[in-house]
Length: 106
Length: 120
Image (cartoon, each protein chain N blue to C red):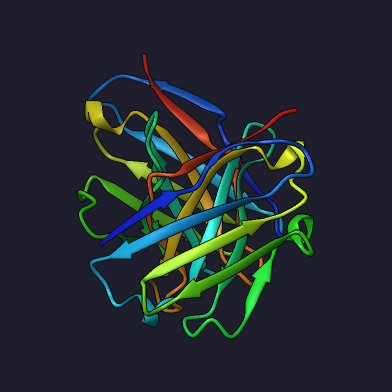
């Protein structure tokens, strides 16, 4: 089973700042990695798939990068609605998720 | 595209519950469908999925032999029969379509979730 480790657990930033979230896989997953956003009381929402492709309706301030075992989700300039928990996810026959990074307002 | 779950509630340990998911806005019979749960202990955990024609299902080890996933493509509906429910099954259960990417298997979109509580 591939284990995904996200860092940091909590990231405290202000609106307008740049956010960088990391996800490390225990073995190579090539570019088969996605990111999801979850706001309180809501279901997760797909943000990035295949490591670097934005999902439908996701603004261009969101970008994903990486391959192999190291991945990054970057939000170039934080908007108030971006503060949420972000999960990375790898998909094989047995999908796995990271434990999440909480992006909170400083 | 919309997924609406129902059927959650309070169940005793060892009891049974049937979750349903009504799909709309897309050709349901074209897609793999999954259930994913979110629990305090394990966070997000994929539970099971089913092929578009319903011919094959896959389960996480912890629910094998207890949960059964099925679908009715004539009713655009997905079902999860949960038997011999345990305390660690407690959480929010999401119905999810598998779509997107070159393998068409990312989780998008998710339903709003239905809460399963386990208590005697």
